Length: 370
Image (cartoon, rainbow, N blue to C red):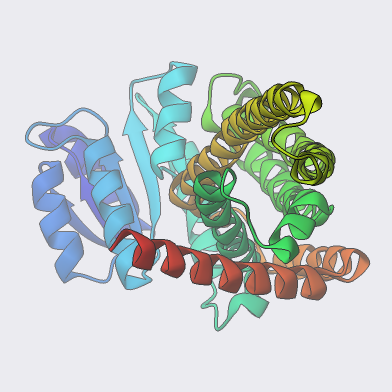
């Protein structure tokens, strides 16, 4: 296996070279992160072993830059951090940024070679993905695109609530489509992450379960808040719609009575004041309903975007390194079952229809403001 070593200490670097070459690996050595990054861009390394604390560019910066290159090129490599750091928080932070494994200094050569063997096995499981049908992570990203469309729709609706929105859009907002779409995704995501956690604990040990301050715990909190908002929004939309209908019916009834009275009638002035008060109440009700809905819609859309960005930049790339071929097959089978049970195709079709209506609505708004 082609291994790139980044170590500023001459003795440690020579020891790593001798151990790795003694097991038949092809080793290239560098003295800091910057030099290692330059060598990585020009080589076809399958593994990187880096010290954490180095001059010019440290191991964390090197790992971050390599992961960026890999994301852009589709390359894979296994990254082992060789370090004297043992704090749980440091290790969790490094794992989230893309580090695959750790070897603590001073290290035992047998443990070191065992960790290298694990990395070699996992490198062999990095299979090229041909389509979303082959990769659970890509399938989840496909769901993300539908959720981002919904987030965009919620943003447009915020501006159109007071003026009125198309009946079909309002009916979709009052239906269970939004919470069901999110529920399917979160169920599939939980299946994927459960598999990942099982594998990472096998590789890294039970200490990894103590992640209360990490991105994984934060993602779960976001799940819970999004689910609560997604369930509440249809009910609030329905209340807003029904209240508006009732108030509008009352105003129309009062308007007919008002029009039927001659101006000279004794009841004209009193009815005029009643009509004005009713209209004022109607407008206040609309304003209040709009304010409540806007707040929840804004938060739900914001959460979706933040959550999706966190998963696609941190959680999914990290998790994918630990998901083997058998895991992928099992997860994809569970995904298919969840989609069929919930009627996902119909939900996606509805989202596309509503998105087209929203695009037309945005177009009309732009013409009006031009």
